[in-house]
Structure formats: C-alpha cells, structure tokens
Image 1 (tube, rainbow, N blue to C red):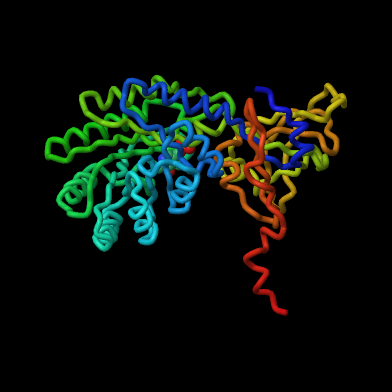
Image 2 (cartoon, rainbow, N blue to C red; image 1 turned 120 degrees about the vertical axis):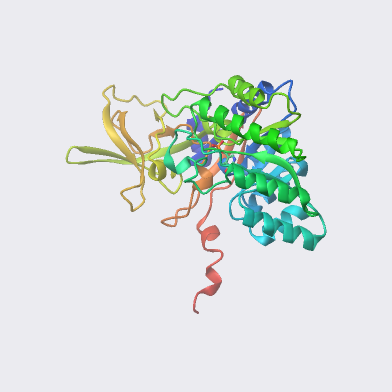
Amino acid sequence: MSIDFHTLSQKYGTPLYIYDFDKMAENYRAFKEAFSGQKSLISYAVKANSNLSVIQHFGTLGAGADCVSIGEVRRALTAGIERYKIIFSGVGKQDHEIEEALNEEILMLNLESEAEMKRVELVARALGKPARISIRINPNVDPKTHPYISTGLHENKFGVEISMAKRMYIYAKNSEFLEPVGIHFHIGSQLTDLAPIAEAAQIVADLVRSLKAIGVEIKFFDAGGGVGIRYAEETLIDPLAYAEAIAEATKGLDLTLMCELGRALTGDAGYLLSSVLYEKQNGDKRFVIVDAAMNDLLRPTLYGAHHRITFLGQVGQETSQERNKADIVGPICESGDWLAKEVALPQTRHNDLIVIEDAGAYGFTMSSNYNTRGRAAEVVVSQNSERVIRQRESFEDQIRLEKAYLHV
Ligand SMILES: *Cc1c(COP(=O)(O)O)cnc(C)c1O
C-alpha cells in the first residue's frame, strides 16, 4: 500500500506517527502460519508499541500479550486481549502488581529470581489462590546484538541460571500456592542470527526434559521475542526457519510453543513523518533541522540506531538533483538530538517532508515531554480506513498534574 504522506501531514500536522495495520497483520500472520501444525500462541510484546488500538489490532488477529508492568497488563485487558493469553514478565514486579495480576487471572507470571518467587508465593497465599508461573531462564548465550539490548548472558540482569531454575521449579512444585506451568527465555532484541535462539531453545528444552524426569510437567514453552527487522542491510530471520528451530529443539515434548514478538510485528509498519524547518551550515557541516526530535524517537540517541530517511519534499515542487550529505537534527537543546547522520539530501526548503522509516517499534513508546514538547499524534492507515488513534498532546495535557500546585 502506498501511503499519501502529504495529505496526512496536511490533515494531522507533523511530527506524526503513522502505522500501517495491514503490514502489521501480515507480519503477525507470517509467524502464526510458520507455527501451523503445532499448538502455538504468538504474543505481542506490548512495550514495542503500546497504543491501545495497536494492541487491539493484534488481539483481533488472535495474538496474546507479553507485558512488563501492570500498566501494560491493564492496557492489554483494556484492548480486549483474552486474559488467558496474557503473560507478565519483568525483573522487578511489586506486590501490588503481583496481586492485581493474580486477581485478573492472567495466563502466568514469568519469574526472574528466587526472591521474586517467594514474594509471589506470599501474595498468592494471602489471596488464597495459587499463582501460575513460568521461570525465565538465562541460558548464557550471546545473541550478538547491541550490548544494551542483549539480555541472555549471565552478565545481564535478566532470568536465572539453569541450576537455580531447577531448584525453583522443585520448590514451586511442592508449594501449595505456586503452579509451575511455563518456561521462558528471551536473549535479546534486534537479533539477525537464528543460531543463538536455536541454541538457547536447545538448552531450555533439555531443562524441560530433565524437569519432566523429576515430575515437573511444563506446558508452555516461550521462546521470547527479539526477532530483528531490516533497518539497513541486516539479514533477516525467516519465520519458518525460526518456528522450525523451536519445534526441533522441543521434539517429543507435549508443549504449547509460544513467542512474544515486538519489533518484528510493528517495526517496519511504522513511520515518523516530519517537516523541515531550516537548513544551516556550520563550517563544513550541513544540518537539516526538522520538527521531530529525540523526544519523539530516542533510538538514534540511545543506541546510535540507524533509520532510513525518505525525502518527500512538497507536492508540485521540483527538488534539485544534486544531493549532499547532511545530519538530520531536531530542535531539542542537546547535541545528541539527531535522527540520522550523513544522509544524502537535496537542498531543502521550509515544510519539505521527510519520512523516518521503520519507526513502528520503540518509537512512540520511548517518547517523552523533554523540552516541554507535546508527544506526536498517532494515526493508522489500512486498505479500508484511516483514523487517529492518539491525539497530539497539548500544553494543557502536559501541565495537568502540576498546575494545581502553583502559588497564588
Ligand atoms: C522486550 C521483550 C520482548 C520483545 O522484544 P522484541 O525485540 O521487540 O521482539 C519479548 N519478551 C520480553 C520478555 C521482553 O522484555
């Protein structure tokens, strides 16, 4: 589908997040179909893009939800995800979050330490209802991704090592208030190599076999998320090969195979549309200043991430053929406020449009109000509709929780 960015910019203004729901559905189906013939549940990792309408879209397609805070659990429930398809992960769950999750009867809490398991047991005991749990295994496998988004090495804070996990499963099996039903790993994000995932799946499946031998029956095998997308020239993990590797690792076991994908479902289905404000030259260095900034899209600043830029210009106006390198930067008072570096661009004019590609994951959800900038609006396009799914944030929205405390 070709998106009419010019019309969208006139209707809704910029900066503007635009999501292609047909593309998201296509991404989801590629994974769901790859697991056909298996008992499977494809979950959507809500933190990648938490807009209620996005979550609802995946729910309608049949997806579950992977949540990392009670806020995300509430979003999933509000968006209509069935409670028996919701998982709650994260290293630092608080008592009130555990209690609410248990009361909501979600599928399971994914535990990340022994101390947390004891807390969950206490809360479950107080409520008088057993907690369905899974344990996140840290398989100590190097996912070969950016160190900030590697999570499956012992040096990362996530999960527990195999020997500890075994002890925890035995404890849980003997507890009146813990019901171990799942096992989980998630070794990192933006993975472009299947081998570390396959290796982790093998390690964790072997653990399932040894647990089975001592009477702990696991039902849900959750291979996490982390499947990468093509921001530049990355090779992609094929959904079929991915599903096959997980099926192969778990061969002979009676399990529901699960994965929880964020970026792979939404990343390439999102665009950040922005308008050029000014051009300037500092010595040899050319800057194009646009109305989107690091508060809208943090990934370049945070990870040094690369996003492709498409220059659209303006309707009915010729652009010069000559292209020269420029850094695309925002209005925020930080030198780190850049969106793309060394992009070949024609001479730009005020209000020329650019599209920052692949902004559908970890884009809007990481946005902030830094420099008292309202968050961008979000709109959805698909073959049969176009609609706003979040209003542009106003100044009043931003000061709402402070205003009452001003001295009179
Ligand atoms: C973030 C996260 C995911 C999703 O990661 P992607 O790289 O976006 O697929 C899945 N599972 C857990 C536990 C996570 O924290």
